[in-house]
Image 1 (cartoon, one colour):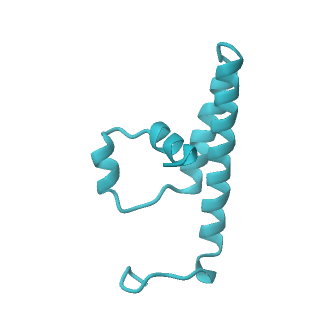
Image 2 (cartoon, rainbow, N blue to C red):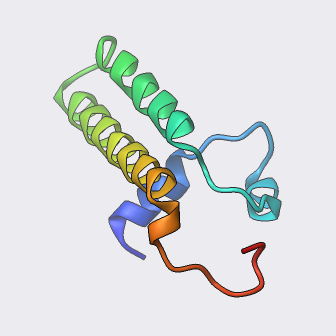
Length: 88
């Protein structure tokens, strides 16, 4: 598993456990990714040391990129391919 995927799995937060995540059929929205990026941005202000600063910056960037990608997908939904039988 790539570091990127592992980071996502390690940092996704839910009220429930991972089982709840797997039961969900919806994807994160751009707004949810942006909210997570903002959380890490705020943590930067209280980080303890260079290692934490670097980690929070990396996570902020990752979630911002995910938000940008999710927004692009939402904006271009009509231009992407869709699997048959999934509500299309």
